Length: 267
Image (cartoon, rainbow, N blue to C red):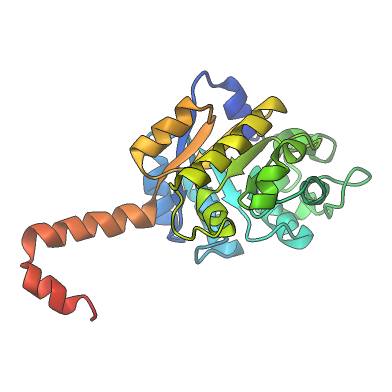
């Protein structure tokens, strides 16, 4: 029996004539992931860096969203060769690797994704969902076609090296993280500070000059639109946990007296 894998996020970007809008999936819940997958967005980011996600929950979420017309991306917590191998073997076809600040670090990520002799990925496709337990014809020979690699630039050093990072063979896109970038610039919590925005746009210019798609995180619609107009090819515009937090707060504001809400604020 032969099994055909779905397109990667690299393929989705290449096929689109507009920027792709996505959201974070941070709850760790397959049910929430499935709910978000059917919302009509272009892509979902299943996060392992700042969320309660391990291998089992990522697997369950990949399975939960598989039937929906949405492209899942998994952000690993670190560009570690073992972690990357395990997440790929779960069947993740697009990875986002955080905190990449040099071309050398980007090259290490690519090596972790590719099989020898071009890389260091361990061979276990007969045992893994990645190749659907050897039901994908010629998976080992065609693995590069089935996997796309995105890296996250979110430091001052990363912005300075953004063009070199984007030019590394095997890097399919660069995602700019304004929050950590602001912290790196001594502007913690000020991701819309003019200096941070200027740094983001410098990274945009360098990545696009290398011929690679660039994306960004921006929950404020006005900020997201500005980055879209500046050339962002993919944008994260919200998060499941943020939507639930703000939505439940709005319910409380509407139905619970302020004095009671204030009293309960500290539990």
